[in-house]
Length: 469
Image (cartoon, rainbow, N blue to C red; front, side, top):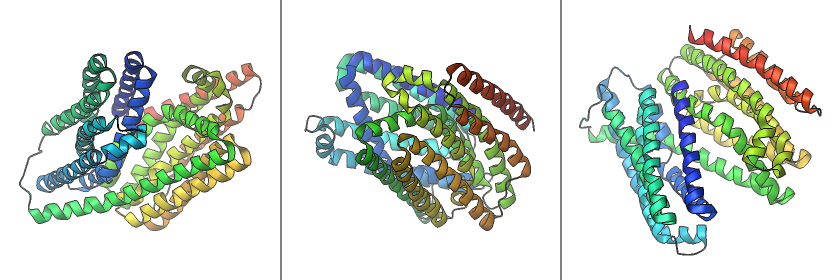
């Protein structure tokens, strides 16, 4: 988590620097164009990749690491599947370039940009595949280094393109970023000891590819349902409260994710491969899930209390004074993110064990239905603050359901030591949330500062003990 978390922080800094150059060289119009083209590219990549990158991690992590031929067969098959999806994504982007220009910008003026964007889509999907191979091999240092170097190279090439071509340099810069990332991921894999390019039997390759598609299709279905639920939730907020409330909700989510996104991204790189590697052993699964739950709670609790403490200042810096009334929503979302962190480790047990049907029912159907119901109900009753309360309710219920299901099917139990480590953190976060309702600013900052200091000290001591075991 420290290696990849540091890499993620560096990439965030790179993105901030790139955004600054876009603002300086291209202005608001260029920023808008860049945002729309990036969103289009990400959407196509998500759909065309068909969830295969995550499926690659699952299959590669679960393979016998001592069996080089089996591992190399998965890598070769994964690359073949990724090439097919990458070409599919590029063809879709090129074939629908006219329509996407009209849908996104209202005219045909960006048709050529979308045709060029197909190259960025191609290398973006290929890069995701290579990154998943590194993740599945648990080459965290190489993955982190490649991410940093690829992002830096993309920035170094992209900024001169903005300067030379203005808005016309946006797509070439996107191509440079995706190509640089793909090249460095590929180089890192080639330098990993024991990896060899082997000729794979056609039937073996087809068998592995079918398995990847089967796993990926579940993730894709769940992702599409999640996208629809987000749309319906925003539509309900707009219908009941207006478009401004949708914007306020997105702003609060953005601030919360600035604090928590790096931790979740870092955890996914290492945790899921480790869990998949021991998926057949319930005792080891229980051990890994408990350890991960404790570590993520120790990191996330002080981080979310820090969010509550600094939110008034952060909103004024990143947004404007007009957004200050979203503070209660940010406080509740911070508490919800802490609960989400607790639900994350047990939520992946079913997928690690290749129980696709259960994973889809829990994540795709139950989780999304619960989120939509809670959002609409709580917003209707309590307004914007209710959306934060809805997140807390969603993950409290999800945590209870995950525990009950995993206990019954896989004999998972939370260790008493893990529970006793998490309990003070839960009390601290809850106390911090309650403290946000203090109306006196000096007492507010003093109380939250004291809670943060105590929680951070407790977490640091526990983390040091965990790392020294």
